[in-house]
Length: 356
Ligand code: EPU
Image (tube, rainbow, N blue to C red; front, side, top):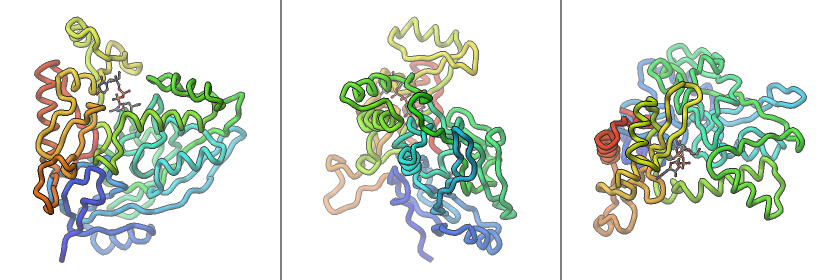
């Protein structure tokens, strides 16, 4: 039987294939699969926007999660809760909520991927994390097909992490996510503008005549992201490739003495610890734009690794399709980790899920 090509189903456009691929549009398909093939390894995929295939041969069945639907399941005077199926587009959800006069997700605009993938890495941007809005996550147990709801505590959300990234979480298939949204009201609205250039970008829109609404904040976030982050449709990538690392105060002070422009923030949840900007570390180590075969460190944002195999300058013979494999990318990641460790004594942790 021919294998299922995954190249078009991951935003890095890595060349890989699975034993089989199934589009899941009905929950019953999952139950049938569990019943008929209980031992088959399953790889649940949204849009493959935070996934790296270490090997070209992925063993098992790729489940392309395409369950759709959004419905209101609770409300109070100031909030509503929506149950959103795992296959819905994340950015689509943000825009639908804004159009419905609801706020809370605007800082998370334009993050690629699906709603079901969002809790896995606890997506975050511009001072907001998904976990602040999650009421519960509906999952199916892979072994039994039983459906359960997990509380935010049970999901063990952390910085770009959750139960679903840990080995214990591998026994669940995410079916839907309940998110709490606030009803927008001009006098009650408290936008979160504390991160980086967000406040100045919003102020510029206001100077241009726009009111301070959730949609304006969303537009500002989108404008910043479009400037800083490469569009995966043009230059394949998975966003940040490394987490921003945390170091002790002593380590931070040592680095600060050597590098006066070091970008670092105290970690509120961890006394005497500092989070360093990995993008800064990589750039200052001279690796911004560094190329290794078909992959490179992005020229504008050193935290993003890109597949440039399809670029005209890649040197691929005319008529031959240039290929980029997970191992090419992981070799570049290891090189960056080694250089950063050598220069700063800091370990960089890979952020996307590596499928081995
Ligand atoms: N910086 C550099 N050089 C670079 C990149 C960044 O010096 O090449 C410096 C910037 O000047 C800034 C600091 O590093 O002072 C932080 O940069 P930025 O605000 O762009 O954010 P980031 O730490 O690089 C994180 C998230 C992004 C998220 C942004 C905004 C992680 C791993 N990444 O990036 O998330 O969009 O903040 O909130 O936490 C993602 O997870 O895929 C992602 C894109």
